[in-house]
Image 1 (cartoon, helix red, strand yellow):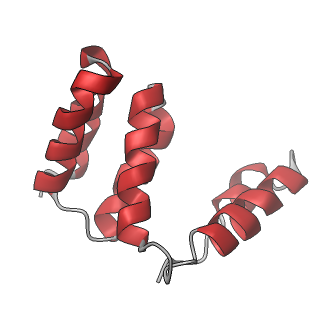
Image 2 (cartoon, one colour; image 1 turned 180 degrees about the vertical axis):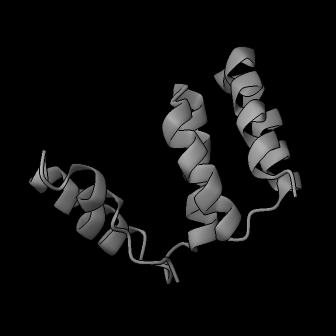
Image 3 (cartoon, helix red, strand yellow; image 1 turned 120 degrees about the vertical axis):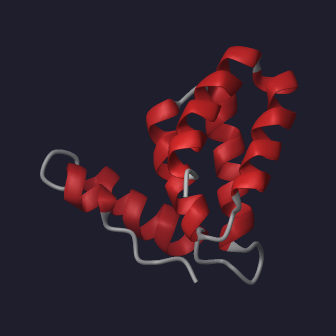
Length: 106
């Protein structure tokens, strides 16, 4: 089961409280928790693919860490990035590999 998300409130609660609430309670609380429809592991793979495709490295780094916690292996992440390199772009793959190499080093 996906763990309770509090990053929105921790990082933006005072500055953008509604956004923080939507992030923690709706996106992670309601959508990510629907594991009877799609596992947290699969959601992580999909999310990493989307973020890599958009070149959103800060968010990709955070979600790669979540993916690892959700059971995505180094080999699976390498395959995901390799596959997407032809669809999302070679430079984006290089950036994603830099993150993955650090996150999955152990």
